[in-house]
Image (tube, rainbow, N blue to C red):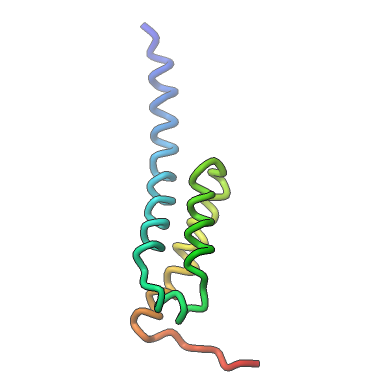
Length: 92
């Protein structure tokens, strides 16, 4: 029997499945946030959703990077904007 093939397939599923879930979670999170949160956080919902979708379809390393930047950089600002605790910077 050819069990080596199964080990290779399992390896790719174990490696890729969490990455697909990560990018999918980031994309869904970006889609369900109201436009008012995006405006309060000075971010573009359209740009982030397009970036996440493009990254998830074909540009996997870029998609993972965009998802991580969104989840750890933009998402906290959106959450703070939703709570009304986002501090606005004074214009320079």
